[in-house]
Every structure is written in structure tokens, then in C-alpha cells.
Length: 240
Ligand code: PEP
Picture 1 (cartoon, rainbow, N blue to C red):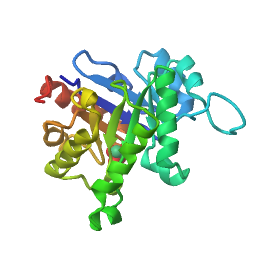
Picture 2 (picture 1 turned 90 degrees about the horizontal axis):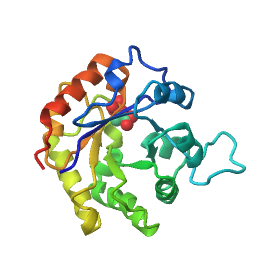
Picture 3 (picture 1 turned 180 degrees about the horizontal axis):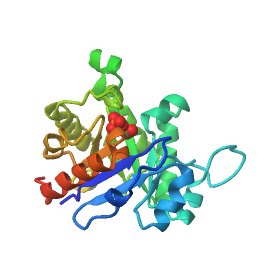
């Protein structure tokens, strides 16, 4: 059985307040991704935290970057790899993202690897080949472990208020699962991300291959995030 994971990506925003909604829960995993400035505060306050990014190399001439070992020492348990905003803003390739995932695993950090197609790629009917290439880059570096999760985040749904229809998201999640190594297929969590909100999360999280959510906008609103977490808890154990 896959434990649901609800992750809040605060992006480049100040910490929401109050923080009560963001603490660990017993039945599901709740993880937050604050800015680098706020990570220590959140870790010291007892939250399960991840970094929004870390470099594949441990140290060196990479001005403005931070290494996996550094975020591990700070107390991060998770890291996002290849969020579409980083792929776009920092030209991260599938290979860069796979290298980050390998580095995270080597440091005992759980990577959440983000994949997803743009609106144009979907309109051209290329969504599955795009996502398959993003997933297959992970195999080339043997970055596969059950300590890795995937987030399917259609780029057109991120921060736009447009959410994938639950049946379309489920179809893509089932496709992603079919690509995974057989021995990891049933244990790997595949999260959905893209305008997940209190009013649409139940339909998404009830799908058999959707094992949680990566939430941006709604994670900055404690009441909305807490409602999503409560709904996820009510769905546990997951129907898969
Ligand atoms: C995200 O940042 O990963 C995300 C899914 O954002 P939003 O929920 O705002 O679409």
C-alpha cells in the first residue's frame, strides 16, 4: 500500500502563517518546501521539510547553488528535482534532473522528480512521449529506488487554476507507472500537481494511481492546505 504524500511547495514566497496546518500527520506524509531562508526555522519547529532544489555536485564553483549534503546536514528529508519552473528558468535538462535525483539518493534524501508536458505538447498529442523521456532519463543514470517519488505536473495546470480532469490525470499516472521498473511499480508514489485545491483534491486523490499532491498556491493558504490534508487523511488507506 502506498502512503499518500501531500507536499506544499511555497516557491519564492514568505512562510505562511500560522504554521499549524503543516505539521506531520500519522496516516499520511505531509512535507513542506520553504525557501532556503525559511528551511531551518521549519525544520527546528518540527516540520518534515524538503528543499525546492539542490545541485547534483556536493560543492564547488557554482555561485548561488547549494549541495545535497548541505541540505541533508540542515535536516531536509526531501528535495524537488526538475520542477517545471526550474526547468524553464534555469534550463534544467532531463539529464540534469536525473543527476540531481542520483545525488539526492546518494545522500539519503528522497527526491520528488517532477515531470509534465506543456499545453502545446499536449495539443500536439505528444504528452506521453514527453513524459516518457523525462522518466527514462532517470533509468539511464540508474536513479531508481523506492525512495524516489514522481510528481506529474502538467505545466499548463501549474498556477493557472486549470486542473487536469481526474480521468486524464489517472490515465497519465497509470502510463507513468507502466514505465517504472517492475520491482518498483507498485511501491513508487506518483503525486499529481497543478492547481490542486480543496474543491478538486478528493476526485484527484481518489484515483487509484494518484498517491498524493504537490501543491503550490493552495499550500500558501493554511486553511486550504489543512482541508486538503484532512481530505487526504479521510481517503487513507488509499484504494490502490
Ligand atoms: C507547483 O508549484 O508544483 C504547483 C502545482 O502549483 P499550483 O498548485 O499553484 O498549480
